[in-house]
Image (cartoon, rainbow, N blue to C red; front, top):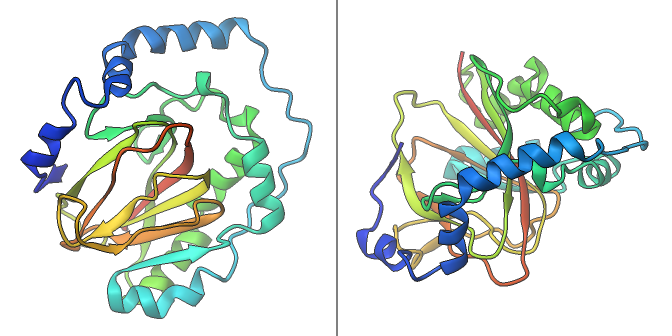
Length: 252
């Protein structure tokens, strides 16, 4: 649960500001039914290009020292370049994601998996590269790599996976997460995009940045969710987009 949200910043996002976002939220239930209808009448994507195996490069381990000192790290070229091309070409059309419904985290989400319940995964196998990425991010081998980057010898497991799609007006109001587990690690895999770099901040009004990602294509921001820094990003510009795979890890 988000805490320490700036009331002043939150008020600045209220209607009629961010008009298009508010319209999307108000019509979320209708748009969800429309997307469900489109999935039933439109053909499944014809993805003939093989996905190949998901490969995360050793650029991840190269950020270990930084993560262990700062409790966050940014990794460029996180996926093998060939597999990343497949992730982009296999990205699902909008009708396979759930429309935005919240002003706090204003973007579409879908393909949601967690350990107890797998939601919205009916069509995952139709997008082979996404499926391969999920399988690898859940795997014991990758969870061990996350622990090695953290350097704390705490065994971890994948807690949740989801896709997000962001667009003009999308944003995340800066906040700190409320957690019972001090070993949570969040990883934002930027698959493709040109705005909406979720940043790490010293404040909750987007005034004092620690780090703001600039490359949102084949990169990853990972951070210790129990730390006191804020994370979020401001409203995205006209004509911009962002696709991510969000992965969270906790203690076994």
